[in-house]
Length: 84
Image (cartoon, rainbow, N blue to C red; front, side):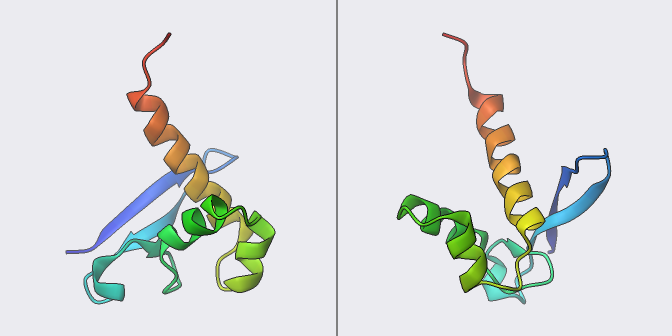
């Protein structure tokens, strides 16, 4: 089974950002068009590295893809947030 997650882009367009396919990295979610696991982005940021550091290490991932993945994560977290 193939999973494709989409996120709204700035102009209201949808483009695939994250892709999960058992034939690619065993189904681990990766950036579309790459074999780079999305988890790598979060690992870099968690370690204190910048987005630019991540993009230099993984040139097949575009800045737009990385930002969209972060937005997708934020939206997922916001859905579970409860007002104080």
